[in-house]
Amino acid sequence: MYKIPLSELKEKIIATGKITDTEFDGRIKAKINELSGLISEEGAAHIIANELGISLVPPSDAKLKIKEIYAGMRNVSTVGKVTRLFEMREFSKGESTGKVQSIVLGDETGTLRIVFWNDKVNEIKDVKEDDVLVIKDAYVKENNGNKEIHMGDRASVEINPEGETVESVRKTTSYERKSIKDLEGGEDNTEIMGTVVQVFDPRFFTVCPQCNKRVMEDQCATHGKVEPSFSYVMNAVIDDGSGNIRVVFWKNQTNHLLEKNDEQIVEYKDNAASFEDVKTELLGEQFKLLGRVQKNEMFARLEFHAQIVEKASAEEELAKLEKE
Ligand SMILES: [Zn+2]
Image 1 (tube, rainbow, N blue to C red):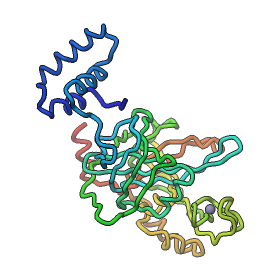
Image 2 (cartoon, protein in one colour; image 1 turned 90 degrees about the horizontal axis):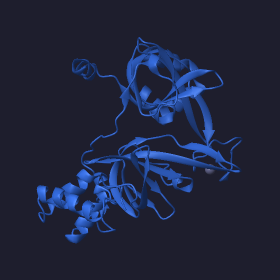
Image 3 (cartoon, rainbow, N blue to C red; image 1 turned 30 degrees about the vertical axis):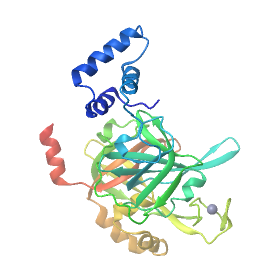
Image 4 (cartoon, rainbow, N blue to C red; image 1 turned 180 degrees about the vertical axis):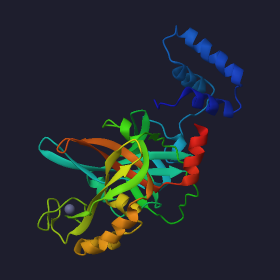
């Protein structure tokens, strides 16, 4: 059974006009009594819907709105716009290695994280923010109280198919704003706001153009000899008055930070001197960063891994202060 919250079940059932608000509450109580309390309110609501001939389950081939997607669903299809693109991460489990990459997809009802594993990661290697994706036959899991779409073997993704548009996106992810001095390491979904006080040169490395994994001497473990492309990572120190932290910007985040594209940034690889101007320009700039806090054991320091980089907006910050 899907995990649909009681309030939403009630809303759906009452919307059919087959039962009123008060009747619904009465029938829930009666049903729980009838079953000697051995059922949850949600369970009772499902039974009542069934008794009234109300289908809470959308037809299996329908494209669902993000809001209509619940943990436990299988064969889910949906369409949305990419609002965030996270870096691909490699991991090892015993003898084998794998990779995982997630994106955030949104429509006018909300946003949702979509997780691609192993070979599925290759299918989104050219995906950019604002691309429209049609997801089919995926399943939905709950992770730390959040719904996530997982791309299993049967799942498929279409990128910018003709005729599919997504007009607006309602952002729902909530990030908690923290002072840098309060960061401890291990926090996810954290927001900091501060000024760039130090900038380091980007570091470049070669990746396989097909799977984005790091390659050494043009040899990809999966794709053999390849013509590698370049990826990069960049660090900067951000200060918010309470303290400072070293922030790690991977490729997409570096692009946002510098407001440049891949080609423009790769040019600095052989021309480090020209990057000095970029550094100077960045110093003193204020950014709002969303991401996670990690302990770097080797250097015994905290690092902020930026996932979303936005120029701080003075109006937004003032509004926030007024609210507090
Ligand atoms: Zn490869």
